[in-house]
Image 1 (cartoon, rainbow, N blue to C red):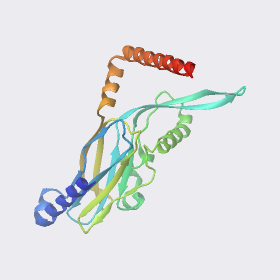
Image 2: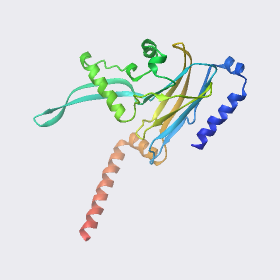
Image 3: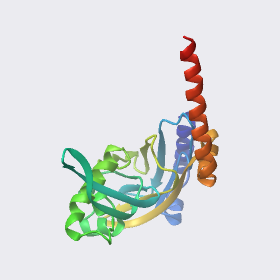
Length: 249
């Protein structure tokens, strides 16, 4: 935590010390993250990442964080003869595994819907395709997908606050839960002026497994047969030892 604020403080001092015309001539928007790599270890319980930066004048700042995309299947369960069974299902393509937005003001006060749609700003603007599904099922199953992601804390329906420190410096804190997916994330920072995107910057963020958990994960995917064999052997050994212990009691 101390390191994060030290980075932000250092950047703040540099930006304050730099002449304003020089900043404006370079770029109207500067932003960075406190950490570009999040290591998931065996005791990982989630983490916060600080985004900080500066602008060269008045305007609103919007930040969009997207996780790696993958396919997601949503199924509807119905009770048949007293048993819950899967009925209809919809497979969505290229679904962001994580999605969060931060802004200085409510989005509808900054951007109109066509602009938000063009830049995919907001969960309701995500381009989720399901080419093999019936069109009539899409609204209901899309809403269910969003509810599932929100319940897992992987989607943030609320807009996180971007706080200005003075007239030019800003910051925002993003929380990543313990079940966050590994992979490459994209952090997009937008400077909005008069309802248009005046400047944009993209910053990478990588979340990866580390330590013995990463070694086990790698072994399980590369040598799935031997991993399964080892898991069964360990389970049988543990059961045999428990049997011996309780038989002597």
